[in-house]
Length: 453
Image (cartoon, rainbow, N blue to C red; front, side, top):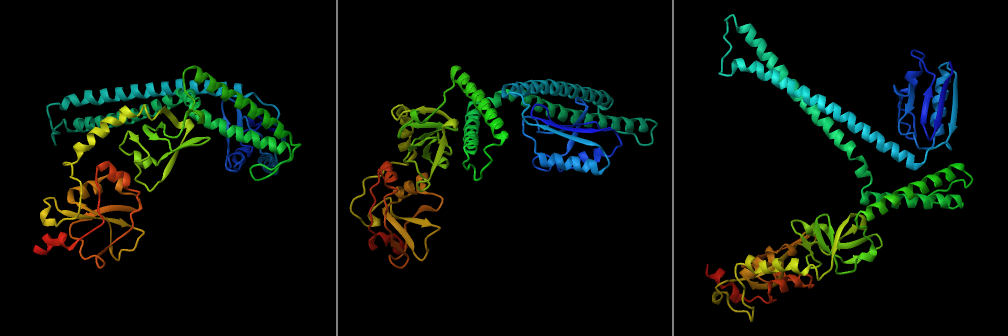
């Protein structure tokens, strides 16, 4: 009997004409086929033949099929190989078939889950009914004529309860599979996911068109006369048209598809549950303060930068909302009103330096520590009152991935233990927000308490 190896885009790769014991099964089960050269053929009871997974709606990888045919011939079998890449179904037909099979899977998995749930409940009832004999704490009477039966009952209870737990786990497994299959179409047609898919398909279509013109694309060239390019061009055009219609249907239902025209600098964008101020508008995304700034916050402004100017991008297909700067003012008012309450009490304006003994709040030196700077001496930025130093160093904006601010009332001797370093002004918004005017002076009189001690 002749073994027929056939491939069409409509049906995929099929192997028919084999019989049990002819030696073909061992060859077909080798994990050396398909485009990855790592796939085995599988037997299908529905098709009554061998098939190669994921070969449907794709062009044949001819070297793999020729390898299979040669191995079967070497085993003494008659083999024919037929490849027709032009025989295909439209993308709409393929997508409809996928949705129908997802619905069938959901129904089948629901049946599996119901059966497992019933078995679990029945096993639990069996265990519970046996345990009623021991509900008052009756122990096993060793040497009594009831000992054998009691031990058998304990074993039956254990077996039934284990079966109940196992079947309950199976029911949960199949229920999860049912939910995934039932949500196939919804996830498949999600607007954000569809927009990303369209972007990739359009890039693939541009590459095919370049190859057809004899140009290089994706780092290599192809023969412009290759008929596969024509078929691939038709497939991509159909698929793009299909998904564009999905986006149009979503917009008709009220789904907003965001683009560059919807934003300008200073607006706020809702990205993954947090509002970020827009720093720059790009063709495919908006630049925002780094998302690490949004930890535990509902609104992140450009001034809320704790990561040395780092930024992130929010792609338009992952954006959930937009507000103007004026619309964000009411949302910011409560946070601004709450700021004074978080401070222990407002600090008076800092004037000329006075001895620490005359200041009830004490005087402190604010230092900057960086993991990329030498540590021969402490590096001082400002002098201010102790409470002001606590407020500055406790602000989340005064620490980043590579630095942090700290303070001390006894820094030691200037030039030996510490030195002034330039203030680049990056933390000026923090000082302004806290109402602090720092000094860059430190006198020996301010060390009086330490000397007295």
